[in-house]
Image 1 (cartoon, rainbow, N blue to C red):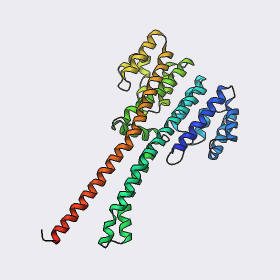
Image 2 (cartoon, rainbow, N blue to C red; image 1 turned 90 degrees about the horizontal axis):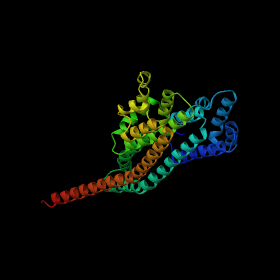
Image 3 (cartoon, rainbow, N blue to C red; image 1 turned 90 degrees about the vertical axis):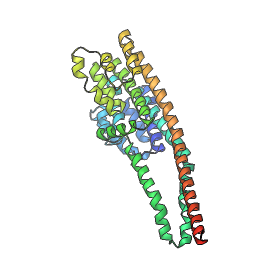
Image 4 (cartoon, rainbow, N blue to C red; image 1 turned 180 degrees about the horizontal axis):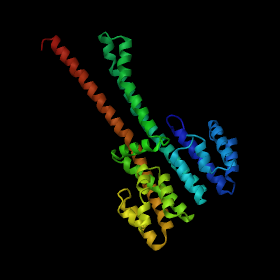
Length: 333
């Protein structure tokens, strides 16, 4: 992706995984599927990285290794999830999961941009119009532009930094910092955690069914979740598992996993139907996380709009108070 991901970037990524899911589900080999995508990729810029992936696969590397060799073209937690799918033999399901994930992100991004259009217009209108009286007080055009752009440029820079900071391509240390910051924002931290738990449950179910040792399966699934906090928590499990504790028992003492996850996982472990429990957990957290994501996308522009209206009202009020104050001074009142 580019410096800052756009709805089109998310949609292209979704289309890539959608085509891979369809081709591999139809029995077409991965290399052959990638060759087809290389001939008609979602965007021409992807032909070179796709060629690098194909060459790495043909030289004997695994799919996840080939993706890593292509540089930062694929986000780290995409690679982690695809590694889990590759090693479990369920790569097509991981393609579908990533397709749904990026399709949702594209839809959310488009909705936010559409709903922000009017508040952004109102902000620019207010900044340029409310600064006009200064021109009648002797301010130059250059001074007027310096004043208005002096208000807008910090907003542009802050918005760009926020969007860039939230990209999934950054290293784990940076993503851990962003995750902790997001947890302080009402609604945002919970939404991120639920979507991470959904990815973890899906990857874990695939890995366990493929016969992976439980600790290795949990490690790979935690990495695929995209949450540094979950990955860090699971990385400390090995001594506990070697001492005879089960994952369900460890989960009960962990603060990183909610009660619903712990209870369903425990019941699946006891009943021998862990795969069903994990599929149910994926469905629950995916639906709830997506619902909250849509709610955030709906309310964030409204909050920004209200803030802009309040700022405009404040500027108008202070203008008239200043005006009447000057009039009163001129009349000797």
